[in-house]
Length: 235
Image 1 (spheres, one colour):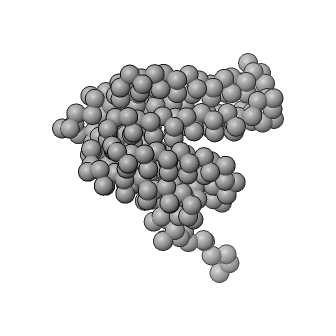
Image 2 (tube, one colour):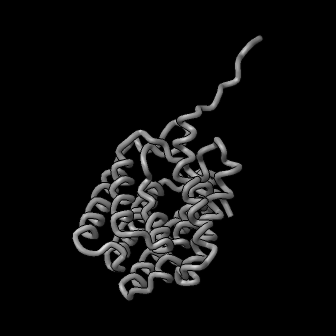
Image 3 (cartoon, helix red, strand yellow):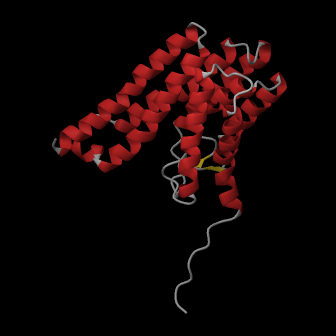
C-alpha cells in the first residue's frame, strides 16, 4: 500500500468515530447507559490511535484533501461533549435546574474551548481542562455522588477550561509518559469494565477509575508546580 492510500485509510479510520457516536446516541436515547458508554469507550480508542497514525503516515502531505483535524474535532465534540451531556441530564444523575445549568455550561463552554487556538501548550499538553466530559460523566455514573457534588465538579471543570492550568495529553506529553500511558490504558479498561457490569456499585473497576482519573487530572498541574529541570550546559 502506497503512502497516499495509507493516509486515506487513516482518515477513514478517524471517520468511524462518527458511526460510534451515532450508536452511542441511539443507546442513550433508549436509556441504555452501559451500552452508550461502551460505544464511547470504543470511540475514545479510535481517537487515541488515529493521531499517532496520522503523524506516522503524514496525512496532511499525503492526503490533504481531507482535513483530519477538523474531522477529529467534529467527532470529539459529539463523543466528548454532546452525548455525555445528554446522558448526564436524561439519566437523572443531575435533575432539575442543576441539570439544566450543567448541560448549558458543558456544551457552551466546550464549543468555545474547542475553537480556542491556544488550547495546546508547548509540550503538547492542554491549557485548561480539555472538555473530556465522556470521561467525567462515566466516572460520575460509576460513583453516583450527591447532586451538589456533581454540579460542583461540572462547574469547576468548565471554569478550568479557561485557565492556564495544564492537563497532560496521554500520548503526546513526553514528561512522565511511561506512567501516563499505562494510566490512560488502565482508565480505558476500568471504564469498559464498569460499563460492562452496568456500573454495579461493588465492582473494583470504580476504584481503578478513581485512581487513574485523579492521576490524569492532576499530573499536569503537578508538573507545573514542579517544573522539569533542564540539564546544565558546560562544566
